[in-house]
Structures are given as C-alpha cells and as structure tokens.
Image (cartoon, rainbow, N blue to C red; front, side):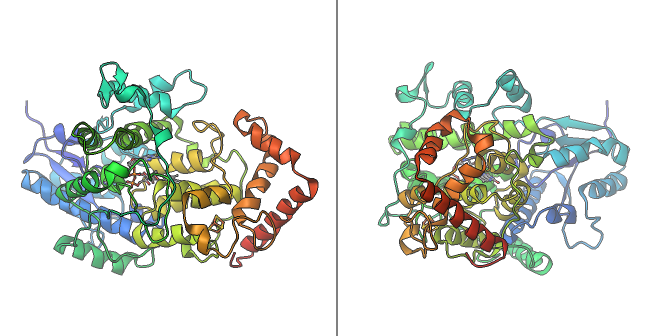
Length: 515
Ligand SMILES: Cc1cc2nc3c(=O)[nH]c(=O)nc-3n(C[C@H](O)[C@H](O)[C@H](O)COP(=O)(O)OP(=O)(O)OC[C@H]3O[C@@H](n4cnc5c(N)ncnc54)[C@H](O)[C@@H]3O)c2cc1C
Ligand code: SF4
C-alpha cells in the first residue's frame, strides 16, 4: 500500500529525534514543517533571549533533520510569505505538497491542542495525533493516578515514578532506605563557595542571524538579548549536562534553596530550557545523575534531590496542568486583583531581593526556583497581585517558560490561586526566610529585623496583612493553624501597625512610587 506524502509539524518544544510523529513518518517521503510565526511570538511578551534560543534551536534542529534525510520546509519569521500562524504555514505546505495527511505529536499547551482540533476542518486533511512519549507519565496515566484523590501530592506520585523507572531503587526499596533526602539539603548561602558556572556557548552563524532578526523585529520585547550563551543544539546541551554533572551536581542538594548576590546560578543545572525544548531527554539526564552517585562522584542527597525535580516535580506539574485544563489559568481562589506593578519589568525597587531577582531575569531569562517561588512569587502572593497578570509575566520572562510547566508552578505552587489542588498551604513567608537563605538583606534599604514602619522589611508586614486579609479563606487550613494562633495572640497595637504599614506600602505601590 502506498501513502501520499504526510506533513509533520514540529513545534519549538518538540526538537527531539525520537518524537513520536517523526517515528511514524518516512524520511525522504514525508515533509517536516517548521515555522517561526508572529502568532507564537506575540501571545506573550517573550524575553528576547527566549525567542532567540527557540528560533536558533529550531533552525539547528531543521539542519539536523535534513542531515538525517528528512525534507524540511522551514519558514523564518522575516520571510515575506510567512502567514503568521502555524495553521497558515501548514496549509501552505499541504497545498504545495498535495499532502494526504498530517502526523502530529500532542503539543505541550492546551491552546495549541485546541488549534489542532480544528485542523481537519481548516486543512481538509485527516490528522493523526500521537501522545508525547518523552515524558515518563502519560496524561492518561496521570488521570488514572489522580482519580478519586481529593488532593494531589507530589511525594506519592514521585515514589511511583521511582518504582516505574527503577531510578535509585535497590530492589523494591529506595536506595539508602529513604525516598527523600531533603532533610539533608537546603543549607543557607555561603558567600565564599566555589561557584560552578553553566556551560556557555559562543553563537555560531545561525545564531548570529537569529540574534540580528530578534533585535530587528522583537527589540521592544522584555530583556537583554546579548550576551547570548545558551546551547542551541543537542551536542551543546549534552556538553551543558556534562558540565553540570562534573562541577555542580555534588552540591546541588546542599545549596538548592540558597540565594547569593551576584551568583545567578549557584549549583543549579540550568538545564530546564534544554529539557523543555527537547534538546535533552529527561530520563537520560536522570540516568546520568544516577550514574554519578553509583560512581561515587556525587552524594545521594544531591542525586536524589535532582532526580526528584525531574521525574517528580516536572512530571507531576505536567500531569496537574492537563488534568485541570481548560480553566486552570483563570483560577483566582483568593480573589487577588492588584495590577502587576511596573517594577516586575524594570527591577526598580529598594527591595534588594526583588531587584536582584528581576535584574537577573532581565539579563539572563533565568532565575532559580527559590528566587521564582520565594522572592517574586512570594511578593506577588503577599501583595495580592492578579494571578492572570503574574502568570503572563512568568510565561514571558523565562527561557524555559511553556504554559504546561509555568502555569501550575505560578498559579498553584506560588499564588495558591487554585485553592490548594496540590499545595497544602500557600508558600507565604516574611523577610526572615529570605534573610536566612540569602545575603540580600545585608545591603537592603529596608531592615529585615523591623516588623512595621517605613524602614521595616515589606515582606514582614505584608505577610501578616496577607494572612489577616485572607483569614476567611485560609483560617481553617490546619497547616496555617499555628501562624493564625500567633497572629491572634499578638498585641492589638502590633497587629494594627502591620495593617497600617501594609496599607501605606500597597498604596505607594499602586501609585507607581518607587518602593
Ligand atoms: C512561579 C514559578 C514559575 C516557574 N516557571 C517555570 C517554567 O516556566 N518552566 C520551567 O521549566 N520551570 C518553571 N518553574 C520551576 C523551576 O523554577 C525551574 O524549572 C528551575 O528554576 C529551572 O532551573 P534549573 O534548570 O537550573 O533547575 P534545577 O534547580 O537545576 O532543577 C533541575 C530540573 O528539575 C526540573 N524542575 C525543578 N523544579 C521544578 C518545578 N517546580 N516544576 C517543574 N520542573 C521542575 C527542571 O526541569 C529543572 O531543569 C517555575 C517555578 C516557579 C515557582
Ligand atoms: S530586608 Fe526584606 S526587602 Fe530587603 S532584601 Fe531582605 S527580605 Fe528583601
């Protein structure tokens, strides 16, 4: 039986040789279609480095596929014939090729899945869809796991993933006797640590072309484009993984939650963009980390912690996203409505921790997890910022940001906008937490030791004000019982001082004053 040519769209986060739709096609006969389109550029104010990373990685992947014998039709953003949409580019390709069908791997985002639903009608072609098997847990498996559970907890899911993959398993038991070594992790920052740096790549001719195009066409987007140093090929991403395993993994666990001025990466892997785009395979990355433990190169607390982030958190978050979409991105359990202040784009604030996290976000399109969760996220939670606006910000500013992973982290973990579908309580904290885990407070205009008044750390009074404001919604949460009891025992004048300080601060924030 002979088939007419199939067209195989490959999206920016599907840059993997073993993509299911590529495996179903035939090199030389079928046509891979890749396109840089205005529709995708414009749906968020994507950081310039993020756009450059994705376009360059796409162009390199197109070259890789051609070298493997594939025919690839690639439309650049500045091609005058570019229709500006993925559907438009597929329609052009289908017409030019007289294609008989479309083969597509399920996309990462609900929005794109809904677009694919319309393709049979729009393109007049049958569309065969393949599950994205680059994840350990399929969407269907997650739905089965989640069925009947009132709340979803990552820890139990993670144990299943350990059993399923055999990673760090000694027979049926976890290696070392415990599933989780977090108790040994999370040491505060030390300023004199030797800091490994992530692997930096010199832009080649393809990347230089992309940088010039992004500069010309998207120069008004957020963030600094240069210096550009991200890996954009599979080999370069492998080199970044090698460097992480050799230099940073052994202390990954110890300093996972630490923050230091001027140290933007600490012992983090800075691999999320490569994993999410498809340049690295998550399971292969975990196997490399596991081997480093069995070789004696890295301790169990570091390797278990790292593997948990990938087969635990990353897989779990994806499951949560698909389990709760559509509708998840519109949730606002706490009814937060404050507009996103301009400082999220400028970093112009006296608050040293926020200024640092936002400046590095602007420069690198990267901040590590604790900066995202406990600095920018914590502030957004305590100040009652509109979750939809915060979600758009996180989706725009990080090189690794795709909705399936960004939205549950922002709306669920950080803002509690989903009412605790997987977090047992909001990640709210006062200045003490930031002071313990960082050196930010040392040079801050505000005093972390002060609880209220113009010099006091804003996190301190915003924390109590947040709890007070949301007492009706959060007061019955058993994990918040002790803090509500502390608030209740506080002297009236102290409580009022916290409320007054918060009201003054938030009024200045709303007025666009420098806070
Ligand atoms: C508000 C908020 C928004 C976030 N948005 C994104 C996002 O858009 N894209 C994204 O990939 N991650 C996101 N995260 C999760 C996490 O912050 C990043 O994955 C991590 O900082 C990436 O840096 P790294 O590669 O150095 O990670 P490492 O600290 O080295 O961790 C190793 C890997 O584990 C995975 N991982 C760790 N934590 C998480 C998590 N909570 N959810 C999913 N995967 C995780 C990542 O693939 C990461 O590369 C967000 C977290 C928060 C709190
Ligand atoms: S004092 Fe408060 S605002 Fe300043 S750096 Fe510390 S936590 Fe941040």
